[in-house]
Length: 408
Image (cartoon, rainbow, N blue to C red):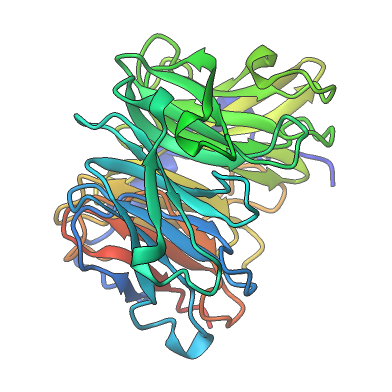
């Protein structure tokens, strides 16, 4: 279907003002129809959720670092009948100031491990080496080792397990913040994990997101990231030439949000065009949609969020209510007595432009609980055919949680 915006770009400001008027009238007392289910709230400062099927049972499991609690935990997704209860879990390691935890095979044994990125005074990346998949819940069998090249180098903030050098093993991509902010990867060493080689890719101010995506539709995975602080803020990708060139030599291309404080970044398709969605402080969401390939360029659509919510942390566009239009899902921090997670329905019409009547507000979290939410994942946890929302909250100590979509 050919992309046809419903209103011309020069009229977008009026449309955005209309959206603001619609959403600003939302009552702070509006109740949520989304049920909260707790996976774990027994430590302090849950900081992020990353997904992988570590035990190969066909279900996605969760890795989370607890920043104030100083623990890295693995949650194994249970059978359907048990998912609304706390999940089976194990503390895979104890480290100070963990900011992120993700899955990767750090010792090249074919079994996924957990990797933690630490800031504060720790400033180290750790590999938490897993036992066999049938022993994952036995805490004593996990082994934690620091990656020597990471120690006291920078505040490590976000990580990703990937294979971009055309060998069968994961590289451990990590991003950090100033001083010494950078993006790079650790090349795993099967005989000495702690001596995995560090390969710098480029400098950074404060990496918020780091993921793989085929931005150009050429069959190659590019490296996408959002940088919150410093001289080169914004959303970028490193273009994979597809010829085996090392990542550190890939060309950098701007997506959008330059000179703005961009937070978490997600991607989606709008009428078969690549699009990215960035939360932007204080209360904006920017949608960057591909507008041409020669050269590749993106058009920016900016949304102002209602004052009844907190400040923007993460955002995604998805048809959450199965209406045929894209809904804007947002998580927030600074949400005391405000909506921390919410939806603006019918934000984009099916044709990919602004809807003429848009922005019906629906709270997910309500206002009574939750202050600082993180990035989120949308997946059908109760297997009823609609998307639920998995996230964590670290100030009210809600912990690792998911909200059940009331659609079905």
